[in-house]
Length: 94
Image (cartoon, rainbow, N blue to C red; front, side):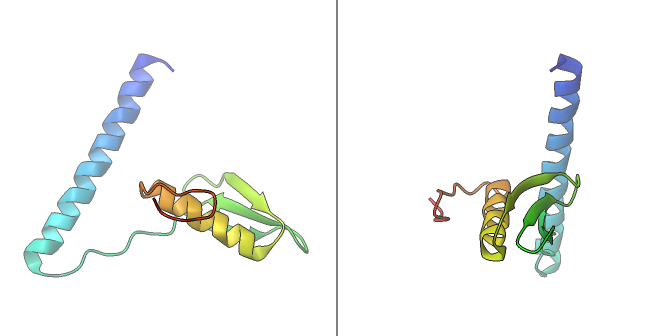
């Protein structure tokens, strides 16, 4: 990746982290809980027994499964990984 592009991505990540921290700090100052974060991954039916797991911010398919339960498990695993938790294949948090 071009260095200027990587620098811009890193800058956006840093700004997002600062905004999240500032929001949490503000809510702590007024004595209220911070709002819950939005769901990042959504399960969409794509046939009689086919389900896509879609990242809501980009609209890209991140995986697919052939049972609803497996698709939900995949979405939850992707969600926990996005939050920074390390999850093994069985869905256990390390």
